[in-house]
Image 1: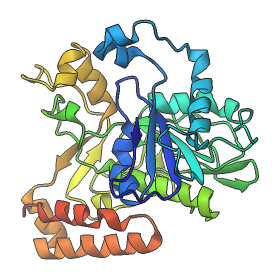
Image 2: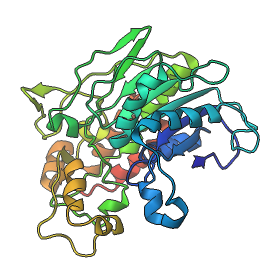
Image 3: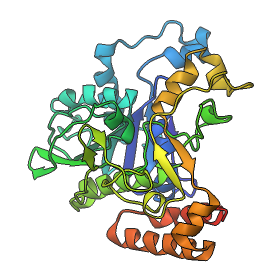
Image 4: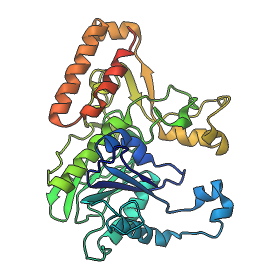
Amino acid sequence: MVRKPSNGKFSGLVVLEAMHPSGAAHMFEFTSDYTMSSGHMAVEVVTSFTEPNAHNRERYKDQNISNDQVPEVLAQVGALVKSKKSGTPFANVTVRKMVMMGTSATAAILSQYLPAHMVYRTPDMQRIFDGFLPMSTGATMRQVDVPLIQVPTMTEFARGMVTTRADSDAAGDQFRLYEFAGMAHVDSRDSVRFKPNPCKNDASQFPEQVYMSVALRNLLEWVDKGKVAPRAERFGMNGNALAVDEQGNVKGGIRNPYVDVPTVKYSVPNEAANPPVTNPSKWIADHGATAPGQMCGLSGYQVTFSKEQLTKLYGNKKTYQDRVKKDVAELEKAGWSLPVYRDAIMDDASKVVF
């Protein structure tokens, strides 16, 4: 699946991911507004026929990709993207740089590819991928010869599954660990799987796209312009648990107005509603009784502040909105928020009821 900007203006940068076992392009979902408005191209690659078979069994019944073949599939497609081969979506474009992304199961696919990355090359012996962006994984990634930005979430910390690998600018070990305060393993704000909410607690409305796009932008500028990605503060810890502030939100990490000018407390994990919700989303219904527990366990939840709490914190709505606006401006200046999402953040602030 190839997604290109509708205006035909291509930046020369490509982001590629394996299709998630659920059939989704989650990393594109997490970065789509930034990716398309910036003129980048997004490529999704089938590395398992589980989902295609579910939708068109007759067409794909004889197709199979073994686990050992997955790195070869990704390398072949990646080389094709850079080849300008006639008859492909890339025939008349020049791809300057390409990065591979992945989240959760596809972050594991990305990790599996890293040893192959050190071997596979294009026909003219150039690197196929110029950087990597694994998300929602706490695994320790192997060192490679291109920049890699890893984004574990609060969910990985709650499970005690987070790498302690240090940031580095050394050749062969260009690495950053980005921890975004408020972010959970899966997006429960925009995903249709949470409409209606199958969980016990209110599903988190933290905008994962707003901040994963920061990580992607930093990686692309690192590989394309040589602009070294900034280092970031990591989450505060209280023993083996995340340290939280007086409002119940995590301390440290990459900050944002959702936790620094809060109107809710973000926590992980959520859990399935009991009894189950009636008329669940099609995905939840199709995947059986364990689906709500799986999705809710990977998501976050939020506890909304009362009007009394909001008044005590901010006095009135205008003061609150002014603080959000100021915070966003400072974060944009520092490079931790993108202008393309400014209106969306302020729209969220406008909906808060005092």
